[in-house]
Image (tube, rainbow, N blue to C red; front, side, top):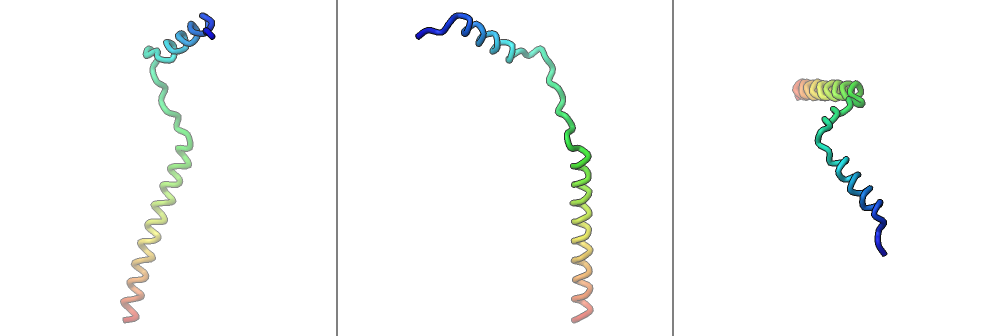
Length: 65
C-alpha cells in the first residue's frame, strides 16, 4: 500500500508552513483580567480580616487572664 504523491506533498506543505518563523507571535489575550484583579483584592481583604480577627482574639484572651 503506497501513499498518493499529493498526500506526501500536502503533509510537507503543512509542515513547512507550520514551522514558518517569519510571523511574529501574538501577545496573550488579557482574558479575565478584571476578574483576577477583583479576586486579588478579595484575597487581600480576607487576609486583613483574618489578621484583625486574630488581634481581637489575642486582646480578648489577654483581658480574660
